[in-house]
Each structure stands twice: as structure tokens, then as C-alpha cells.
Image (spheres, rainbow, N blue to C red):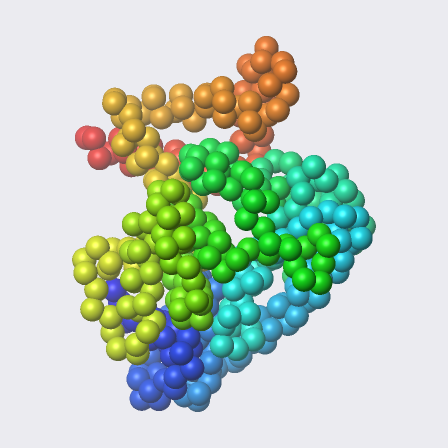
Length: 377
């Protein structure tokens, strides 16, 4: 792990615990490299606080923090307005992830936000689209996955979820959360607004992180989220229930490894004494940016195929990507449930759409295939 990564972790430990950074240590940091890494991890606003205390927050970090505060104010205001419209129409809804987590951070603006996520009644998708369009949003994608994406320049980005996980590789996660209503608790001041218990929120944030970690990767901000949440809530959680649900989801080992690592990194300003396994895990968080990369996703997809396939052939991987199983196709293209005869045509439409909309992902998979061939030589 290079010095810049160590510096970032040190500053995050300071920020998470409200501790002053050592001015001499900060003055020796390469702030250009630090800024670049913090930006890639959506953590510029977090490290702004200890840098400011040490008198070393240059204009770039100041601007990042101010932008984070402004965006949070705008997103919060807009989320309340959208929730009011959903409430007026009797559409159940619940905010997710960062919109809740940011409130646990020591200072406003410390957790940067790219968007807001809301899950809503999937049977009311047309009405939600109508609401969002009437508010000036552009529908970037609706009905193409488990989340509808709406954008309104310059900063508003809402992901409106019809489910928490998509039908596919992580089937246990999809099945567990398919009936998410069973976990939702009514808000006190709302007839159609809901929230998760602290236990279920932690289980969901862990499941969501696990999905990203095993696909395209996820950034160290996820570890900081874990540390901040457990620092605030661990003493009051029903850990027996949490453990049971994590076992059911098959992610208990991941949760324990991630929690141990988060505590080692951020509970002290001293450099963490990590095992080789923990160091490798940390590098995954540090090397793939906030939301992971298409290349990492392609590599992991190839790895999973090789682990599950008897032959591990390139042609087998290509066939699986070109022709997913029938259950997958029926789920993602409901017309096939009544008209399976259309399967060949839907396959062709899927390929054309994939070339048009997912060129980066396809390019990454081609690269992963080439690297696999090179390793075999």
C-alpha cells in the first residue's frame, strides 16, 4: 500500500472520530495525489475536515466540501417534494442507502452524495414516471432493470427502485428481498412512507456492498459507512437477529471480514496491523473507485464462470453470455412468459440493445476473455 493510500486512511480515521490530524504529518503529504485518490473514492469532503484543522485544506478540497453541502441540501429538498407527491397518490415508498447514512456522519456534507435512491410500489411505475417527468426530470431508463434512473441537470439524480436487487447471479439476495414489504416499518408522520429497522438497514447495506464487491468492486467509502454506522448503532442492535439473517443470505463471513477491517482502519489513527487477507481485501476497496469498474466486473464474471464450469472454455462463456437460461429471459422479458415462441427474436433484440447501450461493459468482457486466453498460453 503506497503512502497516499495510507494518508487517506489516516485522514478518514481522524474525520470519523472527530480527531485532529497531526499538522507535521499532513504537511508531508502529497496533496495532488491525495486529492486524486479522494476524488476517485468520493471522499474529498470527508478528508476536508482534518485537512482544514491542520491548515492544509487547499481550494480544491474547500470547493468539494461546499459542493457536497449544496448537493445534499438540494437532494434532501427534492426527495421531500417527491415523497410528498408519492404520499398524495397513495404510493408506498422508502429512501435507501446514502440518504440515511449521511445523517450518521459527524458533520453535514462529510458524506458526498451522487444521487438519492428510493424504492416504491412497482405496480405504480407509470404514475411515478408521470411524477418525475412533471418535475422536469429526463427518464434515462425506465423498466430496463430493477431501478429507474431520472436526471435533472445540473445535479439531481434519482434512482427509483422497483426492487432492491435484480434477478440474476446473486439469486439469494434477490429472493430474500423480493418481498421487501415484510421488512418495512411505517413512518410516524406518513401513511405511505416507510423505513427499515436499524438491524434490517445494516443487513441491506451489507448485502448491497457484497453485491458490488463481487461484481465491479466498491470503494473504501463503503468501509467508512460500515464503521460510522456500527460506531453509532452497534450497541443497540439485535446482533443475534443480524447474524441469523446474514447466514441465511450467505454473506456472514463477508460481513465479519469487512467489519473487522473497517474497525482496524478507522478506530485508531495508528496504522492498522492487517493480515495478508485483510490487506488484499483493502486493495480491492482502494483500487476500483467508489462504484467499481466495468473491467473488474468483467473479470469477476469470468472468474465465477470458470469456478462453476467443468470446461472453463472461452466458447462456453460466450454462449452463456449470448444465451442466458430461459428463466432469466422470462424474468427480464415478461412477454416470454406467455409467448415463448418469441425467444429467438428477444435474444436478437437483447444483443442489439447491448451493443448500443453497454459498449463499455462488452469491451471489458472482450478484454477479460483475451487475458484468459493469454494466461492459458
